[in-house]
Amino acid sequence: MARSYVREARRRGLGRRRERIGSIIERLATEHADAEIALRFRSDLELLVSVMLSAQTTDVNVNRVTPALFEKYHSAEDYLAVPVDELERDIYATGFFRQKAKAIRGTMRMLIEEFDGQVPGRLEDLVKLPGVARKTANVVAAELGHAQGVVVDTHVRRLSQRLGLTRNHDPVKIERDLQRIVSRADWARFPHLLIWHGRRVCDARRPRCEECVLEDLCPASRLR
Ligand code: SF4
Image 1 (cartoon, rainbow, N blue to C red):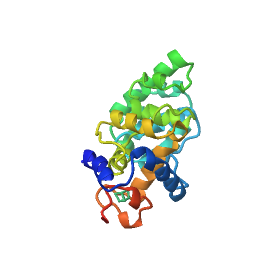
Image 2: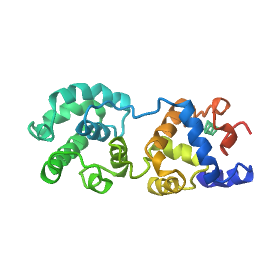
Image 3: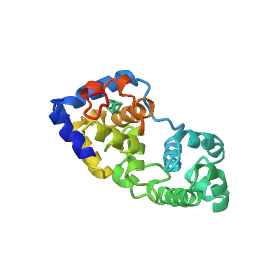
Image 4: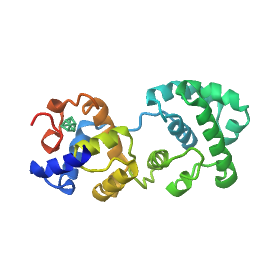
């Protein structure tokens, strides 16, 4: 499917990816001026835990759990000071609680042993943390102000394909394609713009092309 949208863009004379990307970012930035991470956190550690908890669930669900969680756990040591089943109960509502509790405790242990209890800013360090995959690491690094890649979640993947910015399906390959055309200064905000556009307009099942500010730039538009 993605392959056809790259070709379709050419067929419709919409211009090359590099030529369209500037307008895409500009229009989305105007349309979704409030686009930012939906998770609520007050520190680097809370950011890391929130992003780890957001796997396989919604940000809204995570935000329901974290106020009480962060009242109780302030430091990396705090997550190791309770029995694992207590932490599991505290994060139960985010789903996959056993897996997540194990990953959080493993991460906290490594933070203490290798990073003085602090969250590292480098992507190569973040991905060493147990249970922290590239997407999580990219989100954390970007929010810490050191974006070193482009976050590719389900919305970023779908919109990048529909907009003909990639012909790939694998998130790592999509990220590589986006890094080639999006300027580094926009690596942090670009995913937020696509995520919010995906939530508000370019729905997975029913994209509202008639309301979309990208319609004339999009090879997947249903209006033509
Ligand atoms: S024109 Fe339609 S398919 Fe293309 S980005 Fe907009 S809503 Fe999505």
